[in-house]
Every structure is written in C-alpha cells, then in structure tokens.
Length: 215
Length: 137
Image 1 (cartoon, each protein chain N blue to C red):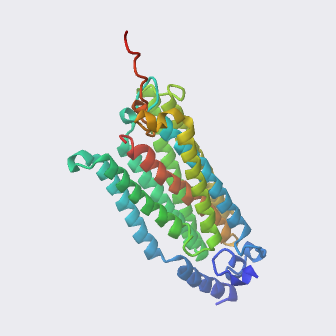
Image 2 (image 1 turned 180 degrees about the vertical axis):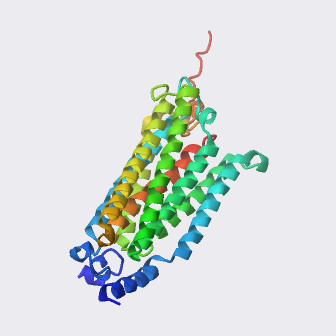
Image 3 (image 1 turned 90 degrees about the vertical axis):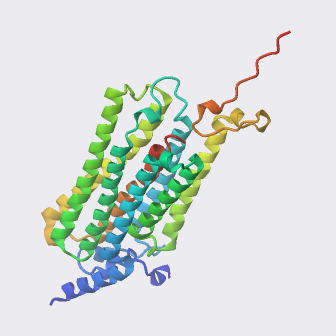
C-alpha cells in the first residue's frame, strides 16, 4: 500500500533505473529502499554519538588543570581550509550520483575520485593539525581533559572520514573493473548519504568547537 | 536507440526533476563557500566589528544552521524524499540535544545552584563559585 503511494527516488529505484542490479530491488513496508532506510537509521544513531561527544567537549574544554587552552593552540585558518575541502567533496559527491543516474561512466568515476581525494586532503589537514598540537604545543592525548575530549571528538570524526574514503575508493575500483555493467545508483546514493552526513557533522564541529573558542 | 538507453534518459530527466539540476547544486556550492568564508571573516574581525559574544554565538549558529539545512535538504535529498527519513534525522538530533542538556546539568549539579547566585556556564571553569572563607573570631 505504502509502496504505491511513495513518489521518492529510492523506493522506485528498481523500476526507474531499468537494467542492472537495481532491477532486483524488493518492495518494502516503508516505501523507502531498505539500504537507504538502514543508512538513515545509522545516521540518526550517529547524531546521538556525535551530540554526546560535542557535549563532552563543551563541558570540559576549559577545565584542564595544566597545559595549553583551546585558544592557544587552534589554527583557525587551516581548519577553515579543511572545511572548504570537505564541503567541496560533498559537492563532488552530488555530481558523482548525478552522473551515475545519467549513466555517464567516465564522469561518474572522475567525481567519485574527487570525493575520495577530498577526503584524503581533509585527513592530511587533520594530520598536520594533530602533529602541530603534539610536537609544537606538547598537547598529547592525556595531557589534560581538554586534549582528551578534543581528540576523542575530532578523532572519531576523522575515523568516519577514513571509512568514507575507503568506501568511495571501493566504489571507484569496482566501477573501473566492471565498467558499464556496474551502475548501482542506490548504492552510490547510500554512500553519498554517509559522506554528506560526515560533512554535516564537520559543519557543526567547525562552528561549535573551533569558532566558539573564545565563548 | 535501444529500449535501455531510452529508459535511462527518461530516468535521468525524472531524477533532475526529483533531485534538482547541476546548476542548482553549483549555486548551492557557491553559497556554502560564501557562508564558510563569512564565518571565518566574522571570527577574525569580531573585535574590529565590535561583536559581542552573544551576537557571535547567535550569528555563527545561524550560518551553521543554514549550511546544515542546505546539505541535508538538497544534497541528501531529504526535501524530495519520504517524510519518515526527515523524522528519523530530527529524532536523532532531539535525542542528542536532550542527552547534552542532561549531561550539562548532571555533571556539575552544584554549580547550577540559584542560591549561590551563579549558574554553571558550559566550559567555563572560572564560573565555579568558591566557598566563602570562615569568619574570623
């Protein structure tokens, strides 16, 4: 019943995309593709995880007994650049899905590669930041409660970016191997949802953690 | 033109209507960049502009919210998708906010005593009021 009422993209993926793996999409209770629904469930629970980590950071950021304070160590210019980078990788992800739906293999592969590259550049920025903290500011993981809560939050986000990069590379490699036979729009859309969520979390972290440093 | 290719082209046209066009995504990308630049500029020039802390928090949260809505609504296609997905995201956000509020109150309950005249401020260690020294005889 719900299936027939649904007019969204994923629930109809099996029919509108025609050939290929998506022809095997099963009808669902919710009218939303099961893979997509599962990803949104994961995203909801991840909201909870990151909300807790951000709360933990806010409560403890100025309570360190020793060691540098947040405003003494943050490099806002570099963090702004990494934010730009992650936002642009999100745009690249939108293009990748667009060209996957349009069945333009080369463009799809190009933009998927750009997404993975954007993620790798972001991880590079994070490596530079952490190295600066540890080597120049002597701010290791256990130096004080600010450091612990900061590394826990940003490290957890970095781990999510790493998973996203691996996912993008696996999609890229699969499409390179299988060529035109592989056009799995729903799989790309689900991966895109994950990637956009990682971007959304960083939007919040950038504001609340970095820009509110003096608040 | 084979049936499959014709089908794919129809699908592509359908998706453009359902998800938005490349032009729209590019416009959004430019807006997202401009907002991020504005956030950075506001942060850097807050003293020169004479922006108070309250205004800074409000302004930056507002800009952040705009970016959040743009990415979730258009890039993640929530605007075009089933309502249950939006509800799921809202549920996650509400649960996260509620947990944060509970932790903020529970972790340092003594600091939020109205009788002491000072209330707990997040992340501010100096807000913890000191006990008054005993009166000398």
